[in-house]
Image 1 (cartoon, helix red, strand yellow):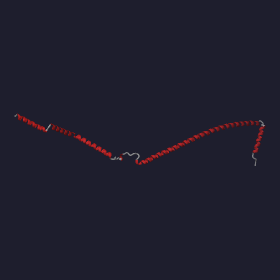
Image 2 (tube, one colour; image 1 turned 45 degrees about the vertical axis):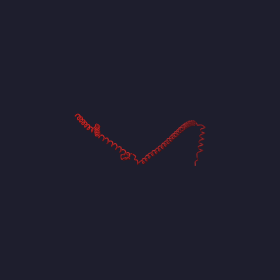
Image 3 (cartoon, helix red, strand yellow; image 1 turned 90 degrees about the horizontal axis):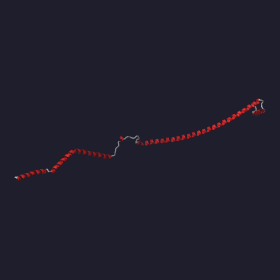
Length: 198
């Protein structure tokens, strides 16, 4: 009996082991781990999708930038501010600047000539002033000389007048022999040079 009981228990134990043998701790842990991974994958699925989308966007943007770098750049002329001087009008603009430069040089040359004429006029004016001053000095000297001569003539005239008065006084007082002789000589000379009547 005991042997049968022990055998039955052993058989039951063996059956239990066989049940657990199909589900060993390793297989249970494996299933649990798989379940955990599957649950983690289901939980991380949105984040993984975002990562994939972001990665795809970054790659697409990098590819677009690479294409843009490789492709020739097209510039919209309408968006560019046009300069005040058009490129097609550059030669004409250069001619305009050249015209201004030539006019400046011409005006500068005219200014130099005018300054030269002005300097010449100033020199002539200085020379004229010196000549005028010289003439004025000479005139003053001549005037002084004439004044001196005039004073001498006045003195001589006064002396003659005085002598004449003295002679007149002597004549009125009965005359003098010398005055009479001189008067006769004078009358003779006057009559001698007088033209003869026709």
